[in-house]
Amino acid sequence: MAVNRGPNPAHIVTVTDLSPQTLRSLIAHLEVSTDFEHLVYRESELDAIWSISGFVLKNDPEKADGETIHRLHEAAHRAHDLVACGRPREAADILRTCL
Amino acid sequence: MLSREENHVLTQTGPGTPCGEYFRRYWLPVLLPTEVPFPDCPPVRVRLLGEDLVAFRDTQGRVGLMDEYCPHRLASLFWGRNEECGLRCVYHGWKFDVNGACLDMPNEPPEYGFQNKIRIQAYPTREYGGLIWAYLGPPAKMPELPKLEWARVPDSHRYVSKRFQETNYLQAVEGGIDSSHSNFLHATVDAFRVTDSYVTKVRNSNNLRAKYHMLDRAPRFTVKKTDYGLLMAVRRNAEEDTYYWRLTQFLLPSHTMIPYQKGNSIHGHCWVPRDDQTCWVWTISWNPEQPLSQEDLDAIASETFVHSKVDPASFRPLRNKDNNYGIDRNLQRTTTMTGIHGFAAQDQALQESIGPEVDRTREHLGTSDTAIIATRRLLLQEIRALEEGQEPKTAHRGDLYWVRSCSLLLDRDVEFEEGARELMKAEV
Image (cartoon, rainbow over all chains, first blue to last red):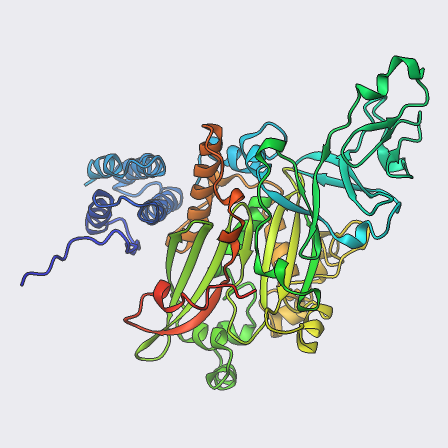
């Protein structure tokens, strides 16, 4: 029997980088998040993306892909606030524009 | 991170503010009975939720809590005379009872009946669980007292202390539910470095916290919304087939319980806004089965854990920011991470170092901060619901508070809610 290996919204995505894989995982989790607990986890992941991208911009402003990171930093902020309002799917759409 | 507006909503607790109105739907600890120890004793000043109040115990032993300022010329009733079932302003003699009724107005002609038209704002109080509680909300919405286990045990099973903290209440609550700080702030240098001598010491220890914190430095965090607030679970790898779980309770509006190990005493806090820059920290240690042990009382006296020695008048801890909390830099080099004695002073030092009101738009949270995020979101939901006319359910369900925190080992295939169900039930 096939086992459903879709994203589990009750699991926190480990955010250690700003890679497309990390963003895809976040987006997939955002799309299936419904409960209070799920939204808390998604908010913490977006906080981590916002923090990491913010530190990169601050510490290495001349970085070649600075514009991309700047867009991601702003998108993470907007997505974070949408999750806080209980709108995780819209947050996923925002984040998808950064892929 | 929070938006500026969210941060404002969560931290402003004066009259008329959304969060202030929310706190005014609950009974709040306000005084130790020893502050108003006998009938007709001197009144004391109380600052609570941004209001200046005065408390007194009247001739019949009832505790009154009222506006500090006499409605006549706004003189402080702290200077008042507590006499014959009322507090008399010594400026012009107006006298008020515990319910706020004006009993006497000797400087006005009695035929005007002026005293029958005047009241002072007074709030109901209750003596319960070794404390005096007050309700500052609308009389028609008066809630139940929370059936917290510590409030229901015999006096000999419980120790309560009160201290003044120079931060907004939310910073203090966030310290209470933040499980990830204890590996650092409260650690010894040996524990932090996992030295051989430390490993030898804790490997066969009964102290599960020390043992398993050492073995797994990267715990997994889970939160569950409950009828009373939140249950925060932290999971660490223990033995090959087990996890070590620590479960912290957050009970609305601002009670917390530290994970306890079966057989030890239990500890908790209630963090009450004094105003927007300071709060009252109520710390409770209790043993549901027996009187507190000599070991418990020694730990309290020596301030090693959650209680602090305070100035008896102001309740400001003797270790405070004016003396750098008694930091011993040599101790910090050799023995403990902070060089500050006692968990309470360590917490207070770091929480106060952030400033009286945090600008949470500038924070950088991560996935280990889920408990903090969950608490903020829950409080915001509750505050906004009240703004829309939905009364907080927990305030009217005292029985919901009949829970405990816990820590335990569970087989890896057991869900923590299931495995800890019995341990999380209060018994008294």
